[in-house]
Length: 196
Image (cartoon, rainbow, N blue to C red; front, side, top):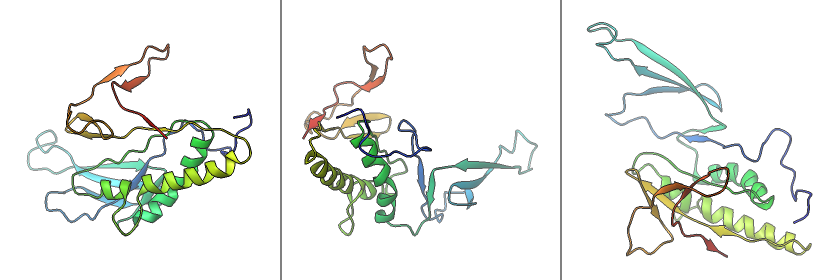
């Protein structure tokens, strides 16, 4: 690739910035006493209960916290809308030579796998990004650019890291370590990367 970026990243978006989005799930669980209100498309107000013993017996004090995200999606937002919000910047970053990580975090049975891999009705984030990535690469390679693409997939469950592209018979949890480079980046030791 030449010294000029293939795509304009824009003056406000830094390629090393983590983009954090929040997808709200229905707040109808009996065990969920957390109250929240969406203030705008980027801010959520969360109301929690402080420890009663710490603040006086029988007295309930409320703790109000503001959390800011790059974008907040409500309970009605579908997979396709979330995928579209992530794909543009992600593809541009990849085509400009940056590594990209996409993570889904949350309780069991809240839709993380459907969001990442699709649900039969809509492609998820990963299939959509791969389709868009290869379409862009096809157009760019016609202009003389070359690409090397590698992918790794992990799952973190109960503080254990599993290689989703590794041997399923292995089933061993992987470990975090630092690499030998001067910047001592944290890496997942023995994680398989598949090049396509």
